[in-house]
Image 1 (cartoon, rainbow, N blue to C red):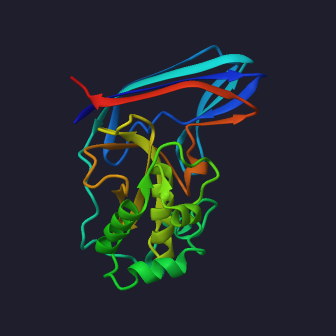
Image 2 (tube, rainbow, N blue to C red):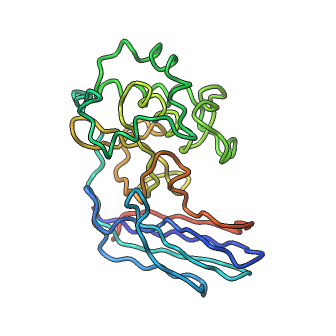
Amino acid sequence: MLLSVRAAASYQLPADTFVLLMVEPPLQGLTHCVRDEHLATTPTNLSELRADIFANPERRLLAPAGTFSFEFTATIESQPNVPPPVDAIEHAPQDIPADAMMYTLPSRYCQSDLLSRMAQSEFGGIQPGGERVLKVAEWVRRHVEYRYGTTDAMTSAYDTATERIGVCRDFAHLTIAFCRALGVPARYVSGYALGLEPPDFHGYVQVYLGGAWWNVDATFDGVRPALVPIAVGRDAADVAMTTLWGAAKLNEQTVEVKEAQ
């Protein structure tokens, strides 16, 4: 399917500020291809696109004091999103590739070590593989209430397991922590989602099963029709839309994802 994507935001900067911007998906992914794209910003003293340590496209900007804004538009061809098969094989630790191994370890927001006992209690008796991962996502969806504005950038998977409220970021972190505690490589993805309400950047999960990465979204009882990854990382800290070196105030932000006519 062909998607039309638009993302825009405006900030007030009290001083010259270095900005990392991650809104531009890889031009070619396993399930998508960017047909055309355009990024417009207010004038900056630096604008260059580099790859970060996870090979994500990362825009480096030096914005002067005052109002800084950007608008990203793209037309993206995306394959339909599919869930992991229930019979997808879970890999033994010695068979996990080196580039996936880091995603079995605890990270700042996904404390799989602190949640290991809970993960074993809830999911240890389920057949390893795709079926168990889907049961993890179902558990998170059933036991965590989606409530916008109730958590912040400091909320971790452990907090979500305790408080049982959150947004997509929190649902993803808890799903990742449980999967890692069970030995399944799981990584955080920021991306564009078709049919998301309210429209926003979306956080979801990819798990490594049967030699491939599969999308898992615990916020939705079903299968999102299309998910386009912008960036992947250990947790949300690695893939923030904007990271600013200094104080800043967000004035407004909009995201639109729809099928192109």
